Image 1 (tube, rainbow, N blue to C red):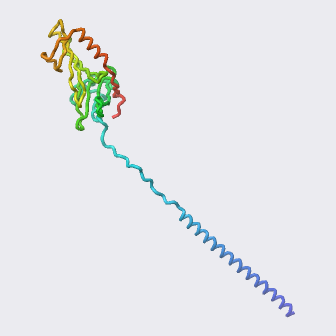
Image 2 (image 1 turned 120 degrees about the vertical axis):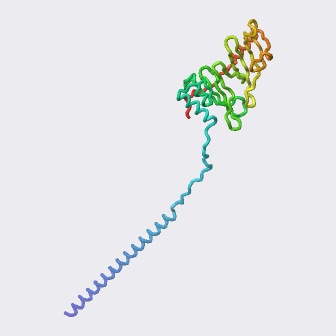
Length: 253
């Protein structure tokens, strides 16, 4: 009986020891697996931290300029544009220091402007005029950074540009007295060249004269043959070129 019990006890102990060994092995493997996972996660985190790219801000190749000044003749153009929008009268234009003819026309589609280098010196002039009639109402240039008016036309004192760059100025004192002054724009000034004058009050039979003064002084007037004078006037009229006036209706203040 005792021998049987001893055998059973030995078998029990062997099973118990085997169970303990198995539990120990399982616990050991679990611990290793946990440590391995933590190590792998830590390694991956470190790799991700190390591999993150460093962002750099782009450096602009050049600085953007800050524009504070208005465009050339900007204030003057704004003034004409505003006067046309308001439909001001000629006297109101004069009060503003502007040519008064747009105040007679009162049509924002008919009054225009042109920016052009008129004498080839690299500086831009401003012309104000009639879009359809091709008449110059006013002309401005820049001197010492200031706007200077060179032409100030009137109802009986008109200006046009000829193909050779000469300004043709028609002036009239009435049906019996009128003339054509020629001006060259040089050195930022309108320089008088000569004139053709019709003055029937002076000589009704031979009313045409060649004149060397813009005020048509009597001592500066030389009689001309009528046919020669009329042919010269016709040539001048034919040489007038069209100025590409932009209507103020297209202007943006």
